Image (cartoon, rainbow, N blue to C red; front, side):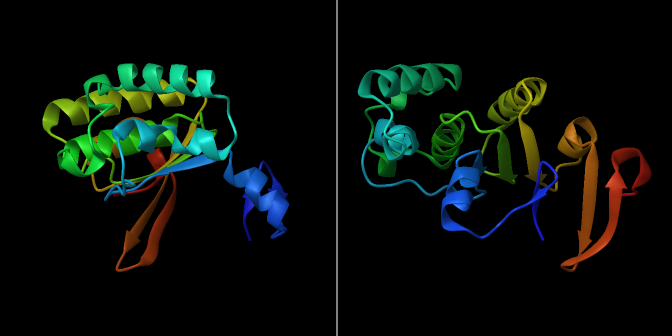
Length: 167
């Protein structure tokens, strides 16, 4: 059973699509589509039928914020692993999600970029974005988690508020 804001999520197609548009996912191994970095970042907005001018402005703003503006016209297959992760993060944030699911976001990033994204996650949390973070990074757990679930061999070992769980 999945609850959203205290209400059980129904499996009705239209309701699931409406809910799906409130969240975004950042995968550990980012998948980028063929084409330019710009194409990859703007795709979620195109799928939502957002106007061209708004898309252009939002792509520029998110690329500028994430310091990847210089990559916009590069082919997504020709950029480094860390750059791919940054593009994936930009694509996830462009829709201004309410809930962000993140799977090991810093795995492909160098120290400077990891620090930058940790600061970005701090900003997102302060803006009211709910983040569900899957990580082995104790820094991220200690600094961002309010509630944690510890898994051991695929089973829940403990779960609770950050100050109640040994990890």
